[in-house]
Length: 182
Image 1: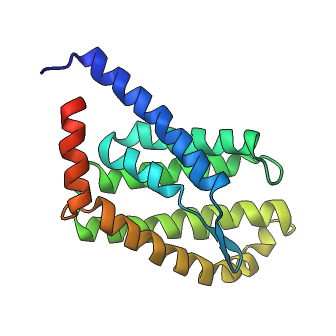
Image 2 (image 1 turned 135 degrees about the vertical axis):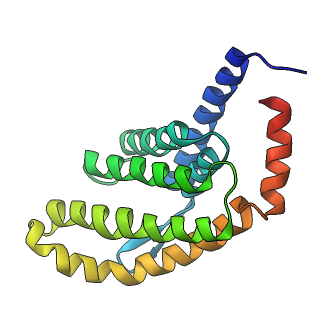
């Protein structure tokens, strides 16, 4: 059964909305684990799903809109657009490496790049500016975030390898079922 382009686009938009909801639940409702100065939550799974199966604009939308709605609906602090920007960049990096065929090497590279750019650079910059007295506090905040970022990278890497690498049976099953719909 062949689907028209409009039906395929509509399905992608609906799936994106569902993934934004999943991101909200996994980021804001399901308990996260605090390690040093970093929370480990599982909202990245929804963003990775969008990145792997829908592509770059959808992954950026799930990450960015999910963060914006989460900040508005379940706030834990003042909203700052820098964190939303970081989430969009995170979704973009995931899509660049995970869309279509993601090898183990691409998954590892993706996690390393995301943790360096998003967690250690951008989020540390925003935290320094917002809470620690400006850019001068960046080195102090950076060193305090190293251990938590390393642990969160390990957790993320394991989950992404199991679910989204090209060799994963879960990914093959998801692709098979999505091909029937899209």
